[in-house]
Every structure is written in structure tokens, then in C-alpha cells.
Length: 195
Image (cartoon, rainbow, N blue to C red; front, side):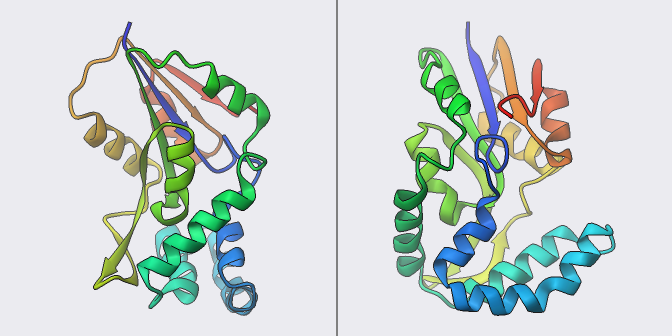
């Protein structure tokens, strides 16, 4: 029996949203300043009057744009070492550790950037499907390669990743409206399963 597991990351497998955690870890002073500057945008976002992708790009870019890939990767490794495994929900960890790896593919599907989620995907032995950071000449441009990996984009990216592979069963886990399409598409969609 060939199975595909699709796990959302932030909130589903973790206790907290990793974007704010990572950016704060990267540069806490800059984070505080930019957070305050972005409050009006965050409010508009809550009221659904602003575009998620634009606000996200603006906030991440305000802290990481112009930073070298080398420095970003080094910080990501430190961030991972500092927070893993305690940031991951224990029951989620147990579940993942008990997955039979034969004939199974597991994806970590997240709107968070590959910058800081890659070490987690590797530790959890999953392929990463995420929002991708754009680097030019070894420097972060502040842009994404492609779209923010959320909602319908999540599903499109999963299909791209599995590239017409056939599975007997597809099992997905999510915790927000951004996971709706993925959960609906799977044979088994679990909402807030590990909460």
C-alpha cells in the first residue's frame, strides 16, 4: 500500500508560528522596529483588507533583504538547534516517528520560507514544499520564487512535487483555512489533529 502524508508545519506540527520566531531570532532589534512599523498592515490583514503575500514579503524583506545566503543559512541552523524538538508537538512527533517508511512519501507543506524550515524537514525526514526565498549572487532579494505556498498554491505545489505518482492513500494534516484545499483533496483530511 503506497501512502502519501502531507503535513502543514506552523501550528499543525509546531506549537507556534515559526516566521515571527525566526525573524526575532535573526535580529531582535530590527524585528521589534519593523514589527511596530508593520502593525497597520497586520491590522489590515486581520480585516482581510490587505494581501497576505505582499504583507509577508514586506515584513520578511524589511529584516532579511540584502543578507547573504551564508549568514541566513547559518542563523537557520542555529534557530533549528535552539528550538528542535521542543517546538514540535509531542504527539505529532510520536506519530511521525511511527510512520512506516516503506512505500511512503512524506511532505512538509508550509507557507513559511524554505530559509528556516529546511532543517526541520530534514530532521523529520520529509521533502519540503514551501514558499521559496529568492537569492541573487548569494544575497536575499526580499522576493519569493513563485507564490506564497498557501491555500490553492499548497495543493498545486504538492501535485507538482509528486508529479503524477499514484498513491493508494493520501493523508493530510492542517490547522487553518490555508490548508482547506489540501485537506479536501486528500483521502483523509485531518484538521487540528494534534491539538
